[in-house]
Image 1 (spheres, rainbow, N blue to C red):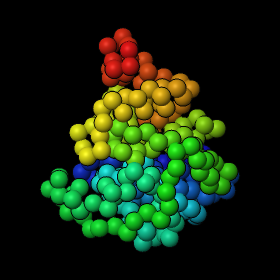
Image 2: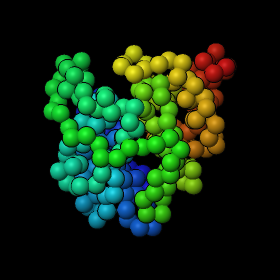
Image 3: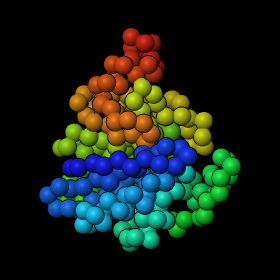
Length: 216
């Protein structure tokens, strides 16, 4: 699997295109403000977009969805626990002094434990509440990588002060579903640089025992 990152907008949000190198099929993960760049890359690579996958429904992770839908009729997938937040996109934007049109709802639901396939690539969908009620991560075990949204970052963790946030749930999700992955697993985050499970396990001040982290 090839992963390309596109960053943009007021929140410097990372959106991704994941390609099955064997077939040319691809998916978009979290189409934020750099959505036009994602479309241009798919066109240039003659890729076949099969789905739009949302790790969660916060404004910065879905603000480019309309751009993608203007280009493709590929279905959008979201965990149902984040549907209410998705439906209240204009109110989310207003919280930050911004405006946003209402988007048509996702066509499909992501279910905890399901396998999502495109081409010869596969993600395991894992429900990881804490940053939002319906947050999920997408773990491509065979490729040694995971899209972790805003659950954990390089040297930090997701915020829990937005609607649907839960501090204890966030750390439980990290402990049970991220730190249990093989140490070399590449983590593609919603903001900031790529990292690995082992790096965060040993150096993240919120997680590492030697720093007195939450999971000590």
